[in-house]
Length: 338
Image (cartoon, rainbow, N blue to C red; front, top):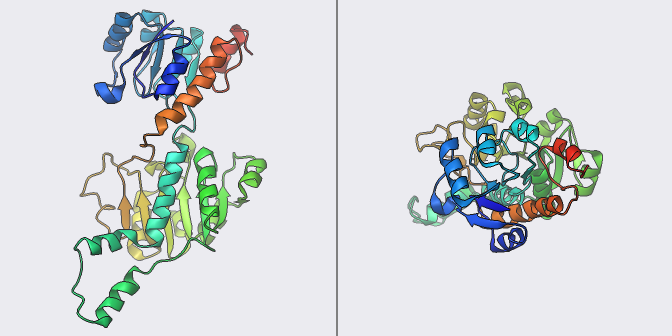
């Protein structure tokens, strides 16, 4: 079997996959190419004679599957939204994906945001770099000192909306700081809460009692507008708000009002309602908001994580065993791996 690989994979993963198939590497980070249309992708598959495809962002529909007789698809994403799953299933093509591949990366950024907000890191760094008022006496220094004095995570309540792969990792990190962690997730079993030492609470209680509120829900129809004006109105006065999930889960106008009224002391976003975010964005212009351009999963370690998850599934499939992660398990019924 030959495989066209446009995803970013570490050397160890390439070596492991290379035991099963010949790899033709065209890492999209190096080629700077994403195949949104079928024709150029089909051309590349035919050029290298590949019947397997391992991608991150390329669009894969039935036309691509048929033109090249694909036998296997690997998608280095949490969910394979760029693959026509129905078409793959109809053709008996397994689709392997990599849930949790960037969970540690996003959890690290979330913790970073907590600490930056709690300790006023951004205004303090800005002051050191020159955005400062004159300090001529002890009173001036004390004014600056008091304005930048922060709080500790110790003894604070951190409320996590969503206790999936990322939420669980965030919980472990902040518990190490001595925080109390509560979470709302109707889909996570009680065993997960117990294992993470997290208290299950209703959403309204979480909003009303948490010093830090952090969003960790998937981008699905059920989470659109999850935090509307009513829910934001329940937030504990003076809390901190962090969103590294999806902006569409939050009512934009209600959140802006809460930030400008003082209900929310400060917030940090890795996601915005209009992306790529501009310097003119009204949230970016607020002094109590810090932001990053949707790079929560951007670490040099993610290729290693996604490679490990992908290899485990492909190894199992080729070895005639049930893969630990497969997006269309229906194909197992006809493959003898059910």
